[in-house]
Length: 164
Image (cartoon, rainbow, N blue to C red):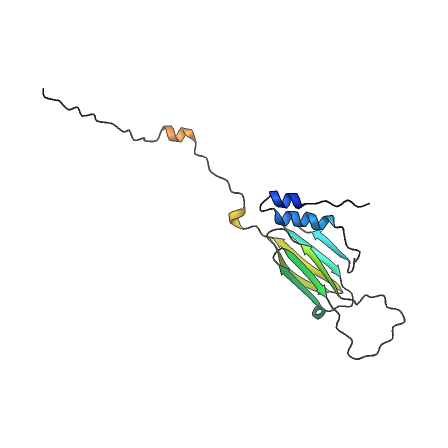
């Protein structure tokens, strides 16, 4: 028996967490049965990743790689044969259309894609903008402030003499 989590109360009481809650909700639906084409996700460095997807029988013209905000969409559709009437005795190479979606973290961008020997490789890189990176704040030492010239404010009190 599968347990379904209801995130509705969290949507009502939290602001700005919609994307995280949508991700949790979609992950709780379980993985789809369709597992074609097979793929690997490889971490190649601290801020770089690679997706390798086996797309045998497809050419670069048959494939489309699109990044829409934080979603990477890889789709493929084999063009119909050029009027050739071919009779297969056995067809083991899948030629059906597909669409794979990958949720990308913030600031992850596609560097490029290449198709070599039936393996589609998509290079990804995380590039955090300078203004969002942590920065060190210098702390002034108190000893330097003690020896510094400090201005003194003197108050002059004028007294009025009242003639009686």
